[in-house]
Image (tube, rainbow, N blue to C red; front, side, top):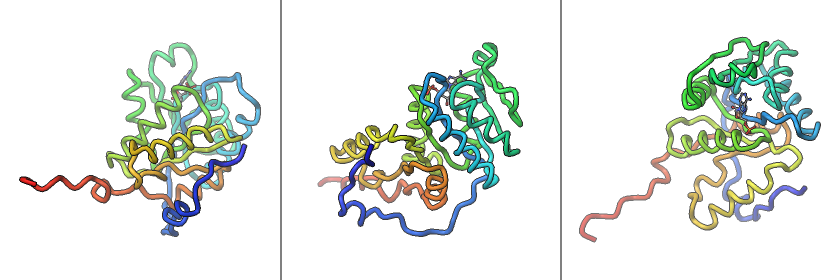
Amino acid sequence: MAEPQISAHRKARYRVSRRPMKTFHRIAVYCASSNQIDPAYAAAATAMGHAMADQNIGLVFGGGSVGLMGTIADAMIDRGGEVIGVIPQKLQDLELGHPGCTALHVVDTMHERKQMMMDFADAFIAMPGGFGTLEELFEVVTWAQLNFHMKPVGILNVEGFYDDLVRFIHHAVDKGFVREELRHLITVDKTPMGLLENLHQATVPDLATWLPVPPTRGT
Ligand code: AMP
């Protein structure tokens, strides 16, 4: 499927400027727990894991052995990469925890898990996934929007999986629900190397630059 179209005007206005590269120690990757998916997605998860391990970037993930979570963890482990899982006790009790993690943190609640994953990571990636992945993605995006963290967020758009979501984000901006300054808060690429390169260059807009100026008293 073709990439969502962005007008030349927007491209010119929002072209990413070249900045000094960030270095990442660890990236949190949110992705599917489902195994009922096309093998192309698993191949992309393996490529993502290899790209991260080769750049000496550790993986922070949901700690599961299932779906793309298990695939990316396996890929990292194959290359000797660091793999940090954070899993709630309830899921660990179902024996869903990945046994090969460098460290597997077992927590009580989903909120604790997400907070810990955010704290451990220097950047965030969503690969294809379902409700859990989308929820995790939009939580870190919302926190970035409000500068509760200043860590870049990206989507690995495998096989155009996220084309409709990217279009919807532009729609939400066009309709005034998301600020124009935040149109490219999520960086998108279809290849792991391209996405890592984008994330290295990305910055989160400072809240002060887009917060509405309060109306002057008495006017
Ligand atoms: P989903 O996209 O709905 O498959 O959910 C995947 C996301 O939710 C992952 O990033 C995990 O953080 C979490 N998750 C869902 N199911 C599991 C599981 N069985 N084990 C560990 N984490 C899970």
